[in-house]
Image 1: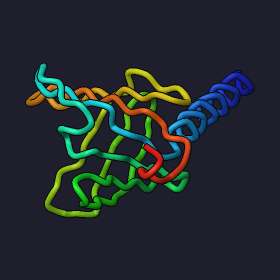
Image 2: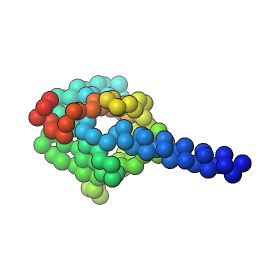
Image 3: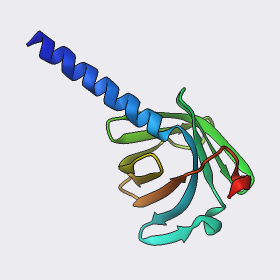
Image 4: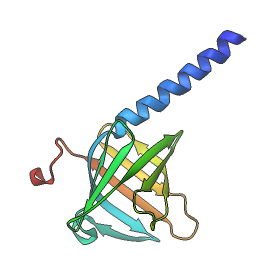
Length: 127
């Protein structure tokens, strides 16, 4: 029984690290849907997310830079900006593979779905 508990704990730690590794990199926000209205990349300010292995993220959009931290627990990612005036955001993973992420907001007020596509390097100039 003790072996089984240790095995389950190790398996859950490995699964979490696997998800963290999948999200590390530079991502183009392809589109966002808010309450059923879908907006493409150009109309939402050409946003790019960057996630590092230490739990930091940045968002470049409309020549603005937002920085903060992220954490992943099971199928939920939480983004906490360094700007104290903005609330944290939580999303459930719809899809998480090596090239595409789909997030769905956990907010009841506004239903938001975000589609991200992984970029080959860390520069929007290649797009």
